[in-house]
Image 1 (cartoon, rainbow, N blue to C red):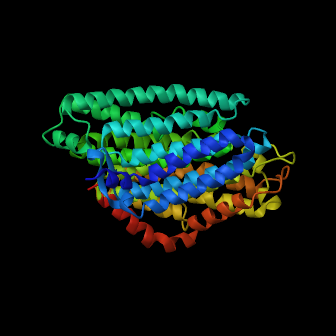
Image 2: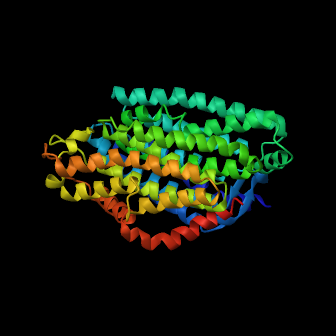
Image 3: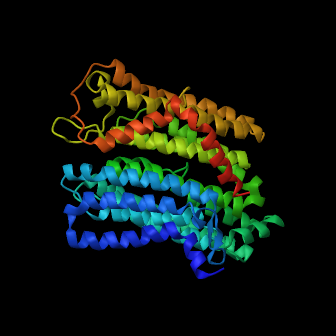
Length: 479
C-alpha cells in the first residue's frame, strides 16, 4: 500500500492536526481577542474532518502496517466526537468572556484532543491506542484547569492529572503484560494468541488493559475523579468531557474487547458485567443527595456508562450496535443538559449551579424548563422519548445473549436513576419561583438546545431506521 493511500485513510486527523497548528500560530499572533473567530474556524475544521470520512478514511481498511484502521466503526465514533467537540468549542467563548478568562488556546486544545480521540477509535494496535489516549489526555488536563484563577478549576485539573497518570500506568502495565505473553501488540495477533487458550499472564494483561480504559469512561470502580472534575472544571469543558471523550473511550473499550480480546469473551464479560452493575447502582444512588447540578450530571454520566456496558456484555453484533446507538442518543442528551446549565446565570450574569436555583423555572423561563425536562425524562429512559429506545436496545441485546438477570437488574436500577431526574423536573415545575435567571444572549446555545431536544423527543423515532442501519454497519466492521 502506498504512503499516499495511508495518509488518505488518516485524512481527518491530518486536517485537525494541521488546522490546530495553524490556529495555534494565529492565536499566538492575534491574542485572546481572536478566541471567537478561532472557535468558528475550529468548527469548520471539524466539518472538513467529518466530510473526509466519506472517502478512504471511512472504509479504507488497515493503514501503516496494521497500526491504524479506517472502518465504519471508527467513522461512526469520529462523527459523534466531531459533533460534540464542535458544539463545546463554539459555546465556550461567551462563557469565558463573562469571567474575563477567554483564551485563544481553548479551540486549539479541543482540536488536538479530537486528534487523539480519532487515533483511539481507529487503533488496531496497543501502541496506537496508547499514543492516541495520551494525546487526548494531555489536552484534557489543561482544559480541566483552564480557569487558572479559579481554585476549583485548578483543583480539578490537578486531580484529573494525578488520577489520569495512575490510570495510564495501569494501562501501560497491562500492555506490557499482554505483549510479554502474546509476543505482539497488534489486535489481530493478540486475538490469535488468545484463541489457543488464555494463560494466566494473558488474563492479567486483559484485566489491566480494560481497567486502564475503564478509567477513561469513568466506570465504577474507576469513577472517583468524575464528580470532582465535572464540578470544578468550567461548564463548557465539563460538557466536552461528558460527551466526546466518553464516546472515544467507549468505542476504544468496545474495539479492544471485541477485536483484540474476542476469544476471551467469557473472561472479560465478567469484568464488564460487574462494572456495568456497579456503575448503574452507584451512579443512581450517589446522585440522590447531590445539590450541585454539574455533580449530579457527573453521577448521571457514570450511570449511563453502566447501561452502555450492559450492551457490550452481550458480546454480539447486536450488543455492539446497541452500544453505539446508545452513545449517539447519550451525546445529544448530555450536550443539551449542559447547555441548559450554561443558561443558569443570576441577574449579574454569574453562573449558578445549585439545583435549588431551578425553583419555579417553568414560570420564569418556560422554554428552558421544557427543554431541561425533556433531557431529564430522556436520561431517565421514560417513553416516548428517545432515551427509552436506547435503553431498550441494550436490555434487548443482553436478553438475547442469555443475560436475563443482568437486564433485570439494569431495569431496576434505572428506576433509582429516575428519582433524581424527576426531582429536577419537580423543582422546575412545582416549587415556588426563585430569582429569575439572566435572559439568554446566545442564539447558538438556544439553537443547539432546541435541536438536541427535538432529537430526543418522539420526533427522534423517525431517525431510528437510519440510526439502526448505521449502528449495525459499524458493529459489523468489528466482527
